[in-house]
Length: 218
Ligand code: ITT
Image (tube, rainbow, N blue to C red; front, side, top):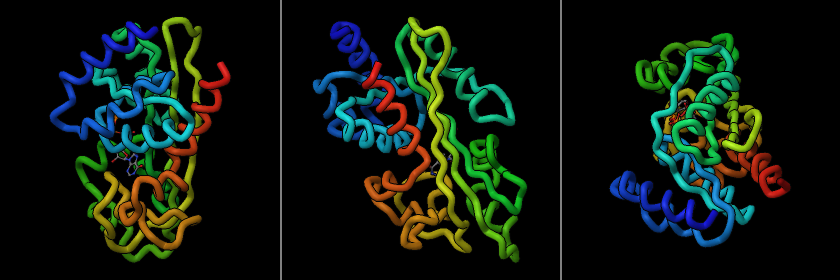
């Protein structure tokens, strides 16, 4: 296992060192077990990394072009990606698929959150919601772990209920963070919170904590 980890760190550092704060990414490597997180999103990695560190686990970003199937279910999308990532890397890996589900829009954008973010963006969502008083929404995260030794992927879910803001607020975080206020918070949007604050409430932190508990027990 240690050799495998070292080889992977070298591959990884060549690909991502430009876009990332080296200290953040590499700080936890020597601590013990490593979770290889297949993602293109540095913010997701950073959030997961902090939660995993609380549990004494290290996180490494693995940039693999894993397939993303079209489906109405986050779990199906994440499972297909994780199987593909294990096949391509030969490593035990973690994949996450998340989405924002808006009740007044019958769950839209949900599993299409990535496409909708790239096309309509947060401003487009606010436009669709203009004049709508019922603003409840939730984020759902599905974290899936799979490894070459495992028969089938293991799924962990996290959900956070909240409200859609009327205007974008805050400049931290990413994606829909400026327009989402978690109900359990103090009225701040996720983008008005530090990563540590967001991790107290977020869908991703919940799912990653469930994964960490399971991973440590295996
Ligand atoms: P991957 O490479 O891990 O797939 P991604 O950014 O495409 O990174 P997802 O498919 O899981 O991540 O997320 C779908 C979209 O939902 C994404 O484009 C984000 O804009 C948004 N999203 C996911 N999690 C979010 C969060 O915690 N806060 C705000 N927006 C989020």
